[in-house]
Image (cartoon, rainbow, N blue to C red; front, side):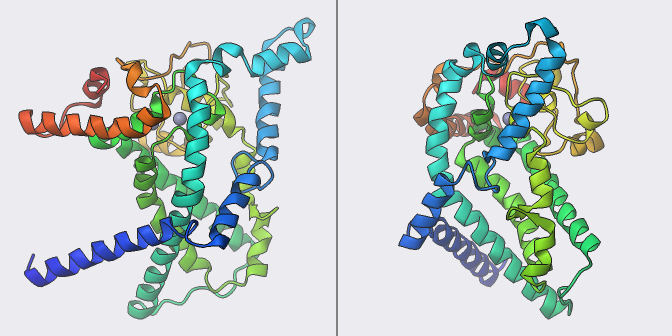
Length: 365
Ligand SMILES: [Zn+2]
Ligand SMILES: [Zn+2]
């Protein structure tokens, strides 16, 4: 690489980092940004773009209700027994679950004020750059109108593409030791509750953002010339119909104590609770399986799917975990950097980071 090219790549990186900072700070740099972020928080149970919106929670409770009715004799049915089935104290009062609740509050603020604005901003930038490149070099013009079936096909296609990228970023988080040091935060949960889904380090968010931005940018390019009233046919209550349908699939139960299977076929397509719970299992047979985030389809296609018998007792957490390293919110945020430091020191002393994931897991790092 010549001096001129080095200078250009340095300026590109600098420009990219400046944009990251600009978008990350956009929610706190103006009063409108602050009020929008506060609105995101106050509406998290009623806004249908939020994973905690009431219809999705209700759908999960309904699916859990079905599992309850099927698993208990009719004589034992009661509201009190169902409540204990849904919210057992040994799970929801477990120290790991209590840490999830505290971590959720901090991560919610971090996501709403910094991460989400940055993701949206970078997606728009990627879209503008991609659009300019396509229009300028390939002479491509975005569609100005689409039939209703084509609009639905595009919405489903982008949703699947987004999850396809999620699959690969999740796999990288497991396969690359430096990234696994951060993804361990998610896997350190010893019991699973719906809020365990949000136990994820910000660095993990940045990694997945790199994979998601091209998809968001592509959607921006594709839809830019279609009038909003035409796009509205693919939305319901202000959210994409595809996303709304996914919201009703019981995704809260993926992080739960209920090993619910959706049956042999749907377990290969949707990410049923038992499929994602297996991803959290400490059994070596389940390591590096079920990387899907919304759909199990990718695991099925690429041979990483594992659906255990639903009577199998799964134990969650990390093999050889030093529990003290994952015992507070501060340690969940700072601990990965210490583990990365240890990894780098070890690699300097003994060679590149090429150990198998199982070895890295059992060392507990
Ligand atoms: Zn994982
Ligand atoms: Zn998980």
